[in-house]
Image 1 (spheres, rainbow, N blue to C red):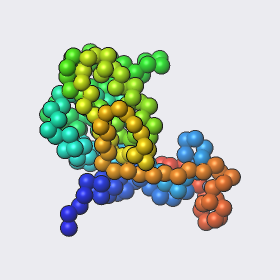
Image 2: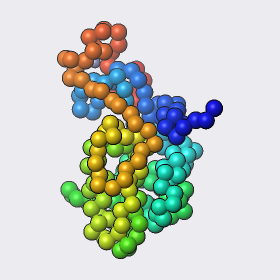
Image 3: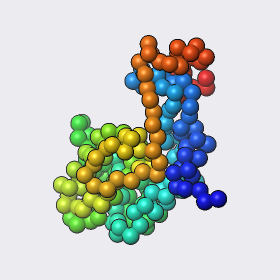
Image 4: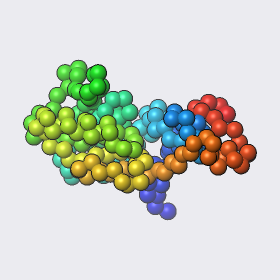
Length: 193
Ligand SMILES: [Zn+2]
């Protein structure tokens, strides 16, 4: 049976517990029945390589010259996408309140840029990074993600493609149906509970 890209991606994310179902306390303090941390998959080089290749496959034929990512979340996956496309990979990092290229990284005018990030939720970081490409006079081809958590709703002004889509509902603790059921105690993701 043919396994789709989305199915294979979710299989990797579940196997590595990058996506887990349970009863979690998110960083915001809200509770959720699902948790997503792509780094749990990317810490496995063989999966990082496979995910990178799948993102690269969505953009083959687009004549990408360089992959640009926001640090830190985009660096590992961007590097693997670049490896699969045979192009270079650069990342932007935050200095004070601004994302910029440092370490001698640069984009040339007219270069065709693919922006890559692990997860897109509101698109804040990749939108900032796309401004760097624009200011350099580079040509933004599009955006590639492992996971779309925006319900397909984020509009970045260029083609955006994700390997899979994941919905995460969250609740105020006082309104959490998992707490109300009394069947589980909420845990912080990554703890052994
Ligand atoms: Zn709860």
